[in-house]
Length: 342
Image (cartoon, rainbow, N blue to C red):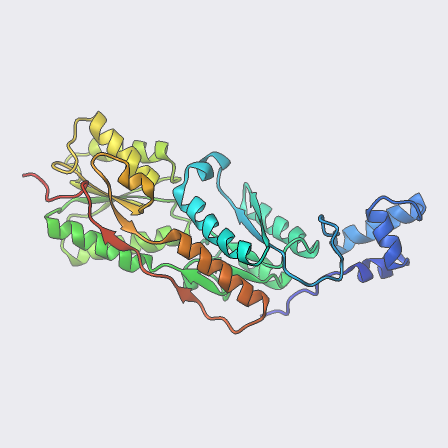
């Protein structure tokens, strides 16, 4: 493993520009005391070194952690509707409030944009550490952020995190329980509406689903990939209900898609749970507001966010950290699952 890149300081910029640290501060705060030519030379040196001052203008020598970063590569509209991230962020915020710290949240359009953003945050001393989410197989963020020396916690199975400390849920065990529960009710044709295959946890769930279906001798399970939105969940459900023969049970990768699927079943005259069982994931309040109420694989997402934040502060404090699983999602049966009507 290559050594972490040394963090560029105001002293490095001053040396490169041939000025004092005070002159660098004057130049970046646009204050009198340096000529325009000197200011340009300082700015050029800073750009070349990849240095930026802290945007909050706190002391450049201060080492206290008062902000952590979280970049999410999701559309803003979807994030606002996604119960998981709202609960997850509230868990992080609960720990930050205890420490009088803040969360710097940014939505990005690509992983490349996130790498550049994390680089600016860290070199500009805007954050003391970061939370990495939505890990991919062979995630391109891991190597550059490790070389940067960024203190970070990855939210994902340790097989995905490239050596970063991780906090994760045992998705494989949860999926296995979901399939075995539906099979015990008598379902032989079970489908799954999941997230993008490139996401690490989606891949883990898909493999666990296929393995459980094969071990139980069920009919080959159908998978439909989505982007987690209600619209895509509805479209996937319509597609499945038009199959012949159609599945008698569907497992969804989040709550919002399961709610949308319930609406589609009503639209198409398919009775839930008599003719079709639906099983959601995460178990937000949405699952208890529908009719019938949605069965779900439930886990405490708020506590998940809390644990992630606490581990990140331990990483920043350079404590010895190992990857930590949180409580495995558990089955909560409600009104949307039942034995299939013959």
